[in-house]
Structure formats: structure tokens, C-alpha cells
Length: 138
Image (cartoon, rainbow, N blue to C red; front, top):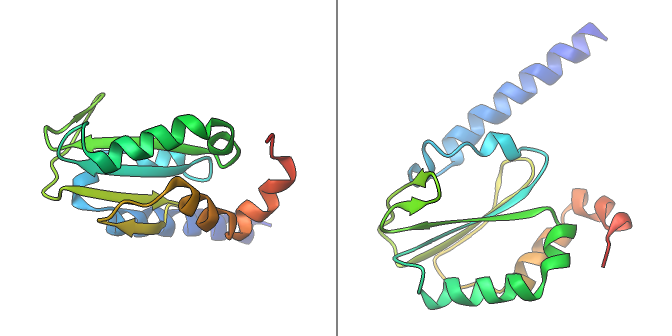
């Protein structure tokens, strides 16, 4: 049992190390570890809040609130101005979207708009999500 505990600790440290390597420079200082194994995260980057791809995603999110809750999804947006709440960053690209899994891995990355339904389909194909579907509220 003691060996098992050490294996888990080592695995956790290794995972956090990989997360530090995998996370783009834009997110340095943003602590994704607090969401590890609890939430999936959609990260968006756009020049400003009026970017059409960002606006489209926000509309889709409002229309699919229950589905977002079922998938434990959170959304964080970073603008070129560098401010989102207490989080600051810089971004050179017009639009970028990342989907981070509960394990901290990047599951999807694109410089093009992606529909929320496409992200749902990707998430729903994951083994962890397959188990969670038994408890969906909608």
C-alpha cells in the first residue's frame, strides 16, 4: 500500500511537470492545476471581446448551459489587451481556442472557430466522459 501511495505522488508530480511543458507561454502564471481532475477548460484568445468567433462561442455557451454543466466546462478568455479578471497575458494571434481535459492535457487546439457542439462531441468521445454521462442532468 505504501508503494502505491508513492506511485500516485510520483504520477501527480510527473503530470504537473508535463502540464508546465504543454501549457503555452501565454498562460504562464495562470494556475490550471486548481482545476485538475475537476473541470475541462475552454481557453480562448482574441484581439478583443468583439471578435466574431468569440462572440459566436459565447452565444452557443448561453444556449447550452446545462450541457456545459454536464461536462464540467469552464471558459476563460484572454484578450490582446491582456486582461481577463485578475489574469493577464499577451497574444499575437487573431483567434485561438484550446480545450484542456480534466487530466490537464490539451485535447484540441485551433486558430479557427470551432462550434461548441464539435467540442461536446470530442469531450463525449473521451472515456472519463463516457462514465460521467450516467449522471447527466439534461
